[in-house]
Length: 195
Image (tube, rainbow, N blue to C red):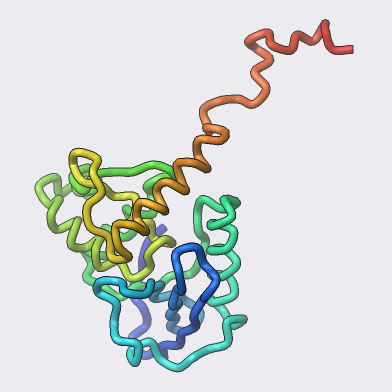
């Protein structure tokens, strides 16, 4: 996924999802592309008046975002597929694109992300760009941790970051992708004993 810049003349609209496990989420769009997802009390949250006019939650892209967020919180969705158009510097958009490559249930350090971007000495700049991510959860900035694995900064608060990581790890731990559910090659259910 790449994170394109929005069209400069697209008017902003917004709606609020009140029924999420992390509290109300304000969704902001420019045309049919999502440009923001903001939690209450989020650091770097723009002023409410900049979100544009209220919109019908059934309008695109709000309906698709709500459906996918609900599926995510039920543990049924691990990757979002929504039109995004995010405002930020070219470096910030590169970081946000890299965030989308972090698999569900896993974490990366700021240093690993910087190295992935070809700027191994820029862990701090990656952290600053991560903190300015305008579409939390969907662009999974909560999956980035400190060099020692500790939780460091999260625009939505460290308690939410911990809850999201714990939730994703629990879902991942049910049936790890590397394991087979029916490992017949190990002889647990030999064909001659079935029938």
